[in-house]
Structures are given as structure tokens and as C-alpha cells.
Image (cartoon, rainbow, N blue to C red):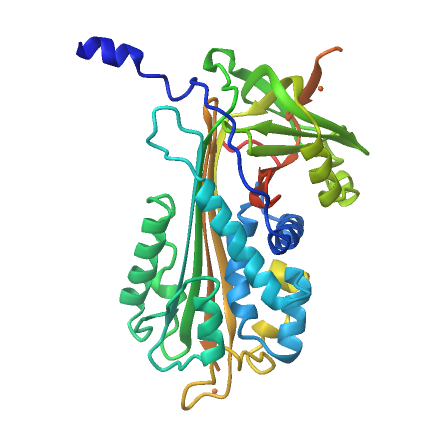
Amino acid sequence: MLLLLLACKPDPDTCTAPANVREDTTADATAAAASVNTLGLALLDARTDTNPFVSPLSISQALAFVLAGAVGDTLTELQAVLGSTDDAAYHQGLADILAALEAASGDPTAECPTWSFSGGAAAFLDDSLEPTDGWLATMNDPYGVSPDVVDFADPSSAAQTISDWASEATSGRIQDMVRPDQIEPGSTIFMLATAVVFDAKWENPFDAADTVSRPFTRADGRLVDTPMMSSTSTARLIGVEGGVVGEIPYRGQDVGMVLFVPDDPAGLPAMMGALDLAQIGHQLDEMSGSDVDIRMPVFELESRASLTTPLQALGMLTVFDPELADLSALAPPPMGFDNIYVSDVVHDAWVQVDESGTKAAAVTTVQGSADSASETSVLYADRPFVYAIRDRVTGVWLFAGRMDEPPE
């Protein structure tokens, strides 16, 4: 009897699950998603490191916590970078996105799992900081965050506390998020953190037997051999100026990976610069899938970076200035200090893409301081490309990356 039961249990990598049916999203969520996606693409463009990978959703939420405490020029710059024209609606939109994703998330231990998502947020404050009632109210509603008191005078203990939270929030994927040497006793007074985790199976898994070494053409024309998985399966495909955009569905079909692949290996920046992301999203949503010959690398990478310089390049300047930052709606400076400001924004993201699906996790920390598709169509991601994990209901990019060359 036991052998019979085991034989009847479906293979979680190849089983078939019904399409997820979800309610329409809110207007606030749709607007916030567009802003999140725009910021994510702008950050990828501003990053100069190889193979950057980010969670635009995690970054936007962390910076929204700062937005809630900003005043004057600091607020204006944050609004411009985040794409917020109505802060209350922006906060509610982010909260609606997170709630919708968590409500639709499947059980990763189910016999035939679809996709799962979880998010988390925390505010670690030094006991010398007295946050305003207004900031606390926004953190509580709509985000459901209650601050925790941390002794930043003890860098080792504070770093361990925050890193333990990040590890637990990402199921162990992001380790050592904060190191003791990042914390400056007598200066660091808060750390705002967000985390997201995603795990999904492809609607049509790739066959590992078809994964072979193929050339990937870098932007400079050099060929690099890398394991490429391939299959002919259902996907949505759009021809755009300078390339092609394709969406490969995950099981459940309401979330997918979008690939932006240029015709010319050196043409990714020009292609991405000419795209209207909202229009592309609408086109993908209105299409039915067709058979597409797909090739893409099998890869795993972790991308950790300070986002301070990229954010400054996008126009977020004042919040990082010890003298000019105005976060008085978050908290007044502790006794003995003249001002509080953001000293760094750090983002750590991990992704694994293989024949069965995709796993990804990310954590963002904001550190505050005090200052004295006929013929079969093809989608060959064998040259630099941008990829994004997109929720088709809200339209938000959970994660986004740029593949410059396959990691070794």
C-alpha cells in the first residue's frame, strides 16, 4: 500500500496545476507597481557592476519608510525618485501589492506547488531616537511594522540582531546582511529593513537532458560558453525596436519571467531606453501564448551593493547630506546631535534559475545616522539581456536583473 501511495504522488517539478484565479488589483497598487518597475530599471542602468540583480519591490518599500519621514527638498527628491505623486496613495499601493502577493502565494510544500512569495519589514531604532507619532502611524498602517529598539553602541550585537532577522526573513538565503564594521557607534541610530522571497516552478519545465554548453555573446563580442537550457513551450513574445520581449510563465500562469533580449549583443542599453514598460505590460497581458523556441542560461548568483551612488545619480541627494537632510517627520535629532540623515542604502539579492524554475531572495537596509510566437518563434537569451520576475495581476516587478555574462 505504501508503494502504491508513493507511486501516485505527483512529481513536483513536472506536475500540472490549474491556473490561479485572482481578483483585480487596486488603482493604488497599479500606480505603485509602475513606479516600482521604473525605479528597478533605472537602478539596473545606474549600476556599473557585472550582472546586477535587485528586488525593486524591496528597495521601494525600504525607501518608502524614509519617504514617510522626509520634509522639504529631501521629500521632493524622494518623491521624484520613487515616482510618488500622492504619498498616502503610494504607501497604500505598496501595501496592497504585498498583501495581494502574499494572499495569492501557494504552499511550497504542496504536492504540486505553483509559486510562493513572502515579504517582511522591520525598523531597528536606537533607544536615543524618539520617532514622531506621524511616522509611527504610517509604519503601522498600512505596513504593519512596529519598531524594535537596538543598541547601536554595541555594533556586534546590533549587526547580529539585524542579520538574524534578514536570514530568517529570507529562509536563510541572505546571510550576514549587516557587519559590525558597517555600524558606527555614536552615529548610527536606525536601520530600516525589508525582505522578499520568491520560489516558483515553470509552467512548462525544461528538460535537464536538453541543457548543453552553448556560446553566450558578451556586449564586447567575446564568446563565453555556458550551460544553456532549451525547450519549445508556450510563451508570450513581442517584437520591439532593437530586439524582442518574451514572458515565460510560472506554474499558475499569473506570474512570469520577462526577458528583454536585443538583436545586437551591444544593443541592450538602447533597446531598454526606448521601451515603455507600462505599454509592454499591457501588450503581454492581452496576448495568448504561442509555441516559442527558448534558450537561456542556467545560473545562480548573488548581487550585493551599496545603492547610495546609484540613487544619488537618480537625484536622491539631500537625504544623504548630513547637514541638508530633513527627516524631521521621522524623528528629531537625539540630544547632542544637530541632524539625522541616511548614511547608506545596501541591497543584497540572490537568484537561482534552472530547468525546474526560479528561486530568489533579497534584503534592503537603509542606515540612518546622526551628525555633530506559423513558424515557431525564438527567444534566445544568448547575449546580454534584462530579466524581470513580474506579477501579471498587479504588474509589479518582484525582482529584476541584467545578465552581462553568465557567472562562473
